[in-house]
Image (cartoon, rainbow, N blue to C red; front, side, top):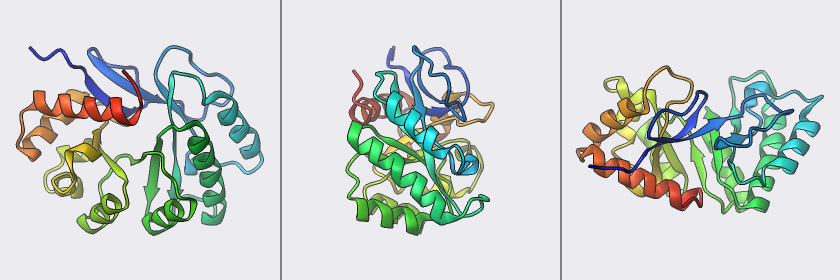
Length: 220
């Protein structure tokens, strides 16, 4: 029997049985759970210029806690209402915190991958950067992998011929994660789909993703 848990690195719901989950502490800058593994960050959809300084301060003061495994989700989204220049400023502030604390970053990115790569290079970001919910074309996948990003795949793996089903085959096993995000699906369903696409046994994939988790999130 395989007693290694499933690993869900980005979810908005409670952890499933036999699963290590990182719950996104979305839009909550007043209360920090003390037991669940969480990530904290400012999503580009929810940037409020009036409260951004206070929210960054909250992240700075609380992200050192042991149960805060990552900064995020944060990033860049050209479809969001906030100007990209402001998004970049908020994103960079969170990257600085991540570097100070040596914690990974869970990234939301829409139509701004060129900016994402540019910022990583310019800031010389050396903590792991994970693009969550990846469902973009193979060229973008190759560029991100070349520049040291991790890719996390979710519900798009359940859609036949989606970009995600092609991109996951390009990524080294050491650089991928799986997630449910806000979808009402089991992480096991994601693992089942990924194992078929990668043509490896599900138990081996569970073990490999768990090893990635321990290495990237510095968790034993």
